Image 1: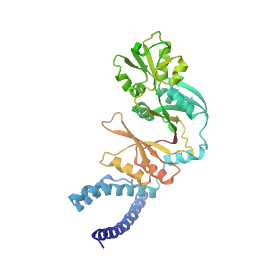
Image 2: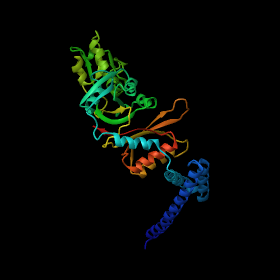
Image 3: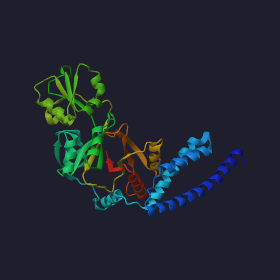
Image 4: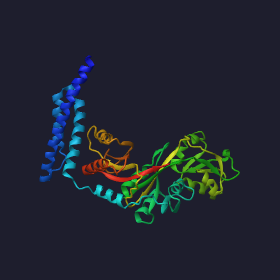
Length: 380
């Protein structure tokens, strides 16, 4: 037997002891949970956990104290989760999810009233037409108008851009999730190709001002950088920009918008596909006031706050990893009125029809700061 084989056998023997001790520890945690339930004691005791980690680090020695700290942070997370499961704390989140799973139809509707930002020809309208075959579209000046239409019941659904592959997240939409109580029921990944549109007969050399939405200007930053003599002006929407150019009496103004807008507003394309990258996609979310969870949902979005301690974010992600769930996006936004405190937005690949996933999210709810935004399918 080689030295390596000897050490592996030694590790196997130690692992057998660890497994037995782990089972004994979780049995003890279950007894603690039973006591806490009977006496109304909350699960988390930060002082107790801090002492446990301190004594473990002190006992193992300086060389391994950071390793044992990481180990115990995971162990304590598991112990808390197990205690909450044994206490069976009521979960409004779980109740709402199970109700939605029962009441949501088997197929996403093809016909609905939908709120979009902008005017005819906007990318949100294109996203809407891909999600619904027979939509009745109401247009609003800004993103908040879309949220208000959904919140008031004027429209069943709303379409909002949430992220672009070149320009990044649309922070205004993330912030609106805190102001309005809506849920994500669908998501669409739309390829966005920008064109420079002007009145027929106008040349690129004539242009002195370009108007478009802020995101479109960012996505076409390289094109604009090569033409420093041209002024870039922000307006509320790419289709609105096209309409501004069409209604203007100027021949030195152009819009960054879709090819579809050229046809709608009688404009000509001076330059096509002027975005920074040919791989330019925008994710649009479809929101509703009521929670709807369709059977084909494969992505979960929620927000939460985290405690101010090292490894808090890592420990949360590791809990998803233990269930084989991929965290595909994390976004942080500052909490207004609090210095350097942030709310985290998570997109996770998974389904709420999985009981372990549902239980873990319920445990996050019980820890506070958790808000569920939706479980939905993302389509191309």
